[in-house]
Image 1 (cartoon, each protein chain N blue to C red):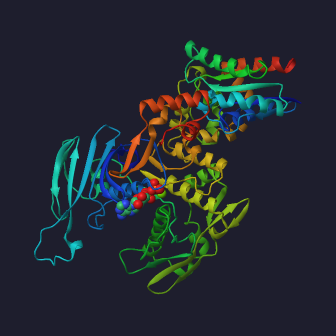
Image 2: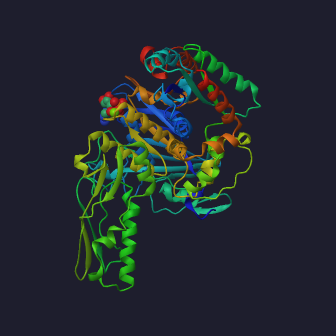
Length: 191
Length: 404
Ligand SMILES: Nc1ncnc2c1ncn2[C@@H]1O[C@H](COP(=O)(O)OP(=O)(O)O)[C@@H](O)[C@H]1O
Ligand SMILES: [Mg+2]
């Protein structure tokens, strides 16, 4: 088993991605969240730079997956650069072997990649055939399309929801996730 | 005007000016539309402020004695109108009444402004009929804010206060309750229980079920407990939030209710709810104090549609559980305004660096009483430095001079 650390908004983003990746990799990878209950803003804080090396070593991880929302489109390169700088800089306090999962706009874009599953859970019939990477504020969209249902979509649903999503569909329709999986597979071959 | 009340524009508390209540002598406060956090040392006046806000917002001259000198409550609507209600205590000069009985001489002057235009001035009785014009319509003024807001086309706000101490009497929860339905009266249920607000629609549902039985001349002998048990249902949104954010896995009305009837009425008694924790059903008395408080906050906040005031939500709650509770409150505040007071550094760590202006600091001044302020721009700058270079906002609160 390869031990891989997870750093991102916790538990929402980390548990969601853990559940999604486990569908394909649970026989060879153990995923370990390394910054419990950390909030989006706090990912930038100096405290994490101090605690991360301890957790990384104690949990005997090979490398870390960093999960961040871009809150913008991929074409907004200044934003992309800012996130990449954050990732490089934080990863430098461990072993510089980490990989970044940069969600275009936000985690919810991945849900749009498998809208059929979302529709069946919320008992709606939303047509979404465009590219999830070109949808701004997908979280708002999901809230809007479920606003008249019994159970309106909430961020806190993500960890359970991601257990049900189809990882292959998401890989096909979300370029950011496809690129991430390519990086991840490479790492698994020679960590 | 949309028919569905929930689709109408909303109002929220934008600004208050308060005078003369316990430690509060004269304060003016601006609030954020979504989430507000009140901090301050013991005795600075946080509880007084929360109590006064609730009293002033819900003041009803036909029901309440005014317990403060002055309040100006300014609501801002989502379509950008300011509605200001002013309440001012005065002493009637009335020689007919015995001078000793000050209480009977206390009156309330009321003013109402829309977008700073005074429309109702010095109204001091509630029998006076006045009209105001809004959006080209004539509307009969009502001293009841919710009625007025409704008539103007907005959602009324039913505010909620959750104090440091829970109410002692909670029918259906810490004591079995009963409902008595009277056949001959126009009103169905004679007494409503004294309990949490979320029971209201459940009771209405049961009441309309009984009304339908009565109208259709159904023989009450054929009605069984199981038939009515089905009508006693806790709202799905409350159950969902309890599952997501608390150790309570489920809530139900105990199947041990009793049903009797005679010629004049139908009585359901031994009504109480039960809680499922760790897969075991238990009564309120077996829940831990922290779980009780979580239930109270989550159920009532979910049910509320408007201003929610909560004193120290962290009381008795484990820090990890409190983290979830704060997630809950932040999520709820997307659709309803929330003001909490807190001594918990963890609560402030839930604010991102762009939300630091939602913090209110209370302090006590020997000459001026309770004072309330926001962080200054210098403090915000310094806090951001702490958040980047040291750790979290709470490190700034703990290590620096914020409340010196
Ligand atoms: N009727 C009153 N008149 C003037 N001051 C009062 C009155 N009642 C309480 N206080 C003062 O209010 C302060 C307590 O305020 P409180 O809101 O309980 O503080 P906290 O911030 O701890 O919640 C005390 O200093 C108390 O002396
Ligand atoms: Mg207090």
